[in-house]
Length: 416
Image (cartoon, rainbow, N blue to C red; front, side, top):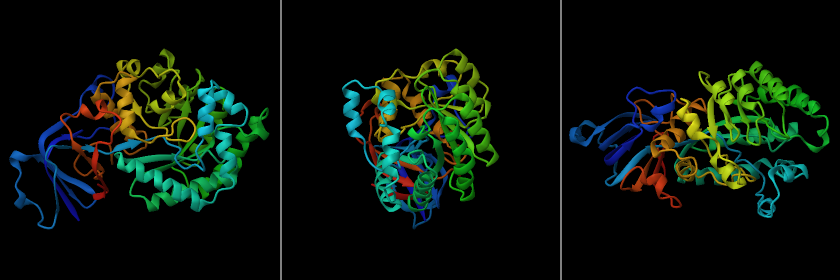
């Protein structure tokens, strides 16, 4: 099976020599080819170039031919932080937020994550798979080609395993590239309030071995923040995860300066995520590390929080990634086109910086930068063809409508 796309108005995010990430001032640059073609063979990008050197006779006669006149081709978005397997929506808490209750106040009274955890105990795997597949199909239609999905709405051994088994099934059912993250330390169950060390012991000694035995997770995560897990808890859990070959991807500094960024860097976490409270000490810790700072605009917008200092981080020379945090409580959207727009409007990123932050840098934050995140020879053919656009800057500018015409994943058209 092969696909030949011709007359591409502009081929976006081209790499001749692929990089693991883009950082600092280089984030303001992307390479493109105007009036281009691209050839996909099997699941891979085989070659691409300018139409002025295009010769149809060089390609297989049975290749699926797509004319992209007036349209652009982007690498698919990579969404490196979601919680999209969940039992039910939480719009009632949305009303509580409108009335002025804080995230912490809702959590303290048994809402938030604990609300989802209670419902998770009663729902079947089949129901979870069905609802999650609908969400996956939705994000494909908006241009996402890879997604990380966390557990964390279980908070018991049985429910955490249930969630991770569902994610394993989704990997087999969906054309998306999916990575799974064990987030047993997402919140502290009510019965462990006042003695959360016992719950940390449960995560390390009971949950983690079973997760590892069944091969259910690619990464391990901890919500290291005020009112949740301490630096000491996080240190213990990340250390235990590494013994099972699970690298960290942690929630850090969403609610306050928690030390989460520093402990993430200490354990060589693949990413530290949220980062609303990031100062000079946190930036210094991230510089020269292998940890990707990942900002989640949807959550800060939905919760009306302060915004992470993305501009300061980039100006300091850091790479920055941006993901959706798709979840029922604080970011009920997996639309990465919206995240792209938020990056420019709320965080003052240039369109080029926002594109880098939602493709190649998020691919690194999933351990996939060698496979995804750019248009490069031999990378997996996960890309989308846009509707007719005047410029690539139009993608973040014209927010609120879907600008994806055709989605191609693993070298196959999956949505058009």
